[in-house]
View 1 (spheres, protein in one colour):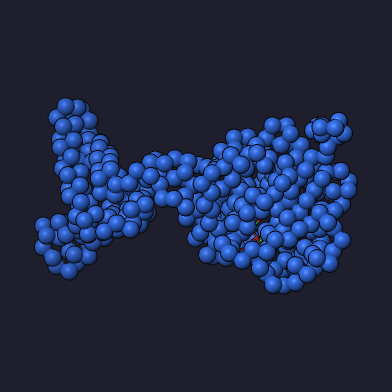
View 2 (view 1 turned 30 degrees about the vertical axis):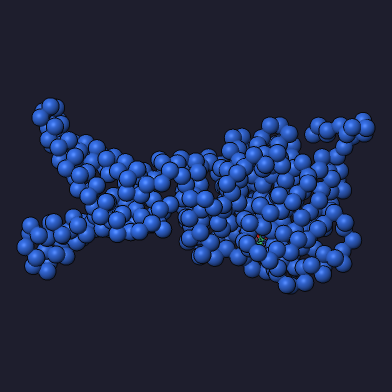
Length: 373
Ligand code: GDD
Ligand code: MN
């Protein structure tokens, strides 16, 4: 690794800050510090460790104070708690030229740190310790459910980054890269994903690690974290793809609305409602469903505005959309007579949906910016 020259001509050691978010990790921390100390001694890197503790009250502070290592510091956080928030705050306090983030529970091997920094020096923007590249291994004996869960979570992140293990919490980047990032608003656990997207990292490199299951303490990954992950994904998609994300959500809601329409129709017919009013009522129910769900998700930026006016505008716009759908289908049928009727209808649906989306975005749920964090 090439080492930067200090002003006086003496070789300056690269300064590295390891940010370690912790919550009740008093048992693991001494082992982590010892392993990092060894890496520090062997590599000659100027490593500082910044433990960002969310007020665990488990004796971590006293334990660190009693230790001889002056390069280890603990910060107790009492507001804006959370893993990602702790990491971001740590990164902002860090003074090193390189930032590393790792868990306290010894799941992440500090021994690969020099290799990570070498990748950064080779031109990578972001280096991930990865379980899923060749050479990477895990010691978790996850049941099928947890395994499937992790795979689905990874799959959902593919529009954001093509790395194999975007769920990893072990990574390194230059502080200057971190400082390029703005509008951080992570929720939950996936801080690496947040940084890759928001700092617009292009060259993301993975190096294989052996992921060791924690020996002491408990995992803090709960069901709640998984719900938060979906919310986080939505924010990242919006950041990266803007209006396209809204369109995608709008289309998904439209698909669900179609199912609601058919279900409502079946129920009404089963209740012996005559056919024509049943058809009309089912359409109305589906429009309401679409309105409520779009207001909550696709256009959540204007959720605080009065809903009554929005709903009337939405139903009106959708009705015009339905007419445009009808007119387009007829137009295609007349002018492209060799096309199957179903294909013409599909084109009608597409044009009608685009109209509905545009009207929703620019009239019904009008707002020109994305909600601030
Ligand atoms: N400051 C702070 N605040 N730290 C926290 C919090 C919090 O609210 N919650 C968890 N931590 C710390 C833990 O003390 C630990 O050092 C680290 O964050 C990871 O938490 P674990 O509870 O060990 O998470 P995990 O093992 O389930 O998840 C790990 O593996 C995942 C992939 O399977 C983490 O590395 C995740 O980031 C990763 O996605
Ligand atoms: Mn863990």
